[in-house]
Structures are given as C-alpha cells and as structure tokens.
Length: 183
Image 1 (cartoon, rainbow, N blue to C red):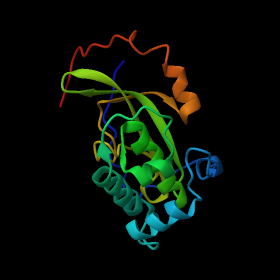
Image 2 (spheres, helix red, strand yellow):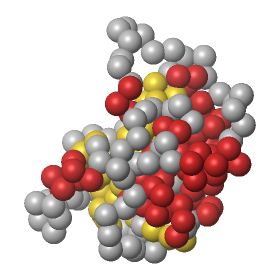
Image 3 (tube, rainbow, N blue to C red):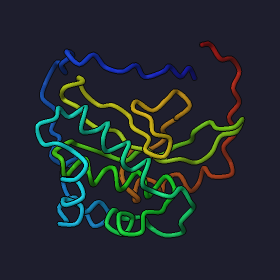
C-alpha cells in the first residue's frame, strides 16, 4: 500500500460532479450533541459566524487541541461530557470536534484507524470535515492539532462508535511495517 500526504486544498477549488447529500453529517446524535445549548454557547465564543468554513474549522481544531487535557478515558465518549470535563483521548477530541463543526454548519464525521508516532503504530481517531471553501473533505486531528492530518494517519473506518467497533477484531493482530519513506 502506498500512502500519500493529503495536500491542503486550494481555497479557490470547488467540488465537481453531482452534489453530495451532506445532511447526515450535520445531524445531532446521542454522542455528537451538536444541537445542545452548551455546545452552541461555547461555539459562539470560538468562531466568528462570518468566517469561511476553513477558518472556522481551523479555530475549532485549535480550541479542542488547546483546551482538552490529553489523557486516556475509559468510556463511550460524547461531546457534552467532553466539553464539561475537558479531558480525553483521541475519541473525546474527535467527538467534540464533530459536534462543534456540525453546530457551525460544517458537515463532519469521525474516522478511526492507526497513526504512526514515536516509531510505532497506535489506534487513533480523528475527523473529516467538509469544507466548501476548500473544495471538499479535509481530515483534521485535534489531538495533534493538524488540518489536514498528516500522512501518518491510516483510516480503517469512517463513522461513529458503532463503526469503530469494527476495529475490535484488528486490535493486537495488525502488523504494519514501513518499507520505504520519501520526503
């Protein structure tokens, strides 16, 4: 498998082809409570409504990165509890970023797979955001403060906790080796 770096999309780029139905990626869910008043109140403190989607997304990634203590949490993450507790691992960061983005009108979803850090691959979760002003879907990792997420991210699933359960069978059995790296 060859993995290439996602390049930042040209702000003048526009998606081509048939319009994609993004409504599912804007909905509030039991874990991504984008319509909750506390989520919307904090969102209003972070972004400026007139900002382009890409600028809003950058502000949201930075806020989640800077304001959540990075610590493992043994629970099923939800955005509201994460906002209140201000602590979490990659799942809490991703669920809160998804809630903020959806509340801001930016279609958002969670992704999960592995990330290569400090010479090893680790389970990891991050987001993908649909940024109209940047031409389409862009990855974002609030734990690492990256948008787009770097090439060390390898996605296996896209979706919420139900989709991430599909990874359970892989954990501990997956073997990945880097054969060659170019810069």
